[in-house]
Amino acid sequence: MNKTGIAAAVGVFVLGAGYLGACWLTGNIYDQQLQQRMQLWNQQPGTQVEWQPGDAGLWHRDGVLHVTLSAERVQHYAPFLADLQSEPQPLELFIQVQQGVGALTIQGQAQVDSSRGSLATWLQQAKLQSLPHQVNWQFNAINQHLQGDVRLDPWKVVTDEGRVEFALLKLQASGTLDQQADIQLEWDGMSAGSEATQLVHLAPVRSDVRLENNAGIWLSPAYHVQLAGVRYVSPEQNFTLQQWDGQGAIAEQGSEADRRLNIQFNSKVELVEMKGQQQNFTIDKMALGLNLQNIDKQGYLALLQSQQASTLGQMQTLAAMQQIASKGLAVTLDTLTLDYNKANFHAQGNVALSADQRPVLGLPQLLARLQAQLDLVAMPELVAQLPNGEAMLKPMLSQGYIKQGNDGKLSSQLKLTGGKATANGVALPL
Image (cartoon, rainbow, N blue to C red):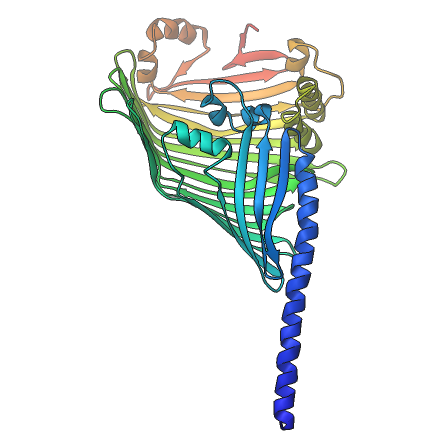
């Protein structure tokens, strides 16, 4: 063999050995990270996770992930599942996992075992053999970057009482296990009911959410949700919602010792309509813009953490709310506008709670710390639709609480300062 052939053979051997070494290193790192991950999961209240290893080798790691959630945890995080049960029960899942080990990356797929656990019980009750689902992912064992997707193909449940049909659902996620994630949801909707009783239809849903880990609490610094529509039909009433669009964001400011949060929420609805024997109304072009400003981050995280506490949760919630209130905050209503049966209503305003370390012991102390202004404008046709609306409007106009302009619109400016409230400058009893 000439020198060129020898060099090529050595090169191939080195590359092969490097690849095998990288695969071995990836598998070894993954095994260590799996044990650490299992310990963290099992530290969560009401959670028990067990990895049952199956066929394993240099290029694969197969097994079963056995997950058990207590009845209390199911009730807290998935109340819709608890509602399907006659009495609170734990959730038990056996997840079949197949993973291929490569150089620095692991590719895997998983399916929930439909022959055992809670899924098997539910499928038997629903007279189904399986759910057409698939989970796929690619994981970098070095930087822990994860990219995966979940797909649930159309399926349905048919009983003597009616039917439920689920359209295609796709979920994509990318990020790291402990720090941040970007999630995209596409669901083509569902329908349920029967011809003789009622019908529920949920039109396509689209969502983009970013998540970030803050001291063990996952916050969403940005999200956007779109719902094409919802329809409910029954012999007594019909309800329709069209084109709901919601988005929000969380921004941080201040020093490391005094971090504050600004939470923004905006929502638009094209149409809400109710038709029935007792209620008939239409709301067009409803828009809401709300900002919560200058919220103490540490108190806010403590408030979210208290919602997960199985014991002493109420005391922790009160303590967190006191911590937030002591630092002060502000709420701004950028806009609230809608057309109720073609009659427009508009509102905007702001509320500020001053900082004070003393606990709020009653309503007088709270009012003394509040400063607020709310501007309201409505068409007179809106008042005419309220029960006894015209009768209530006259004394309010005569006393100055409400003003009517040359264009016929009704307006009022509500203010709260120093524990005293006014409407258009006229004192209000508190």
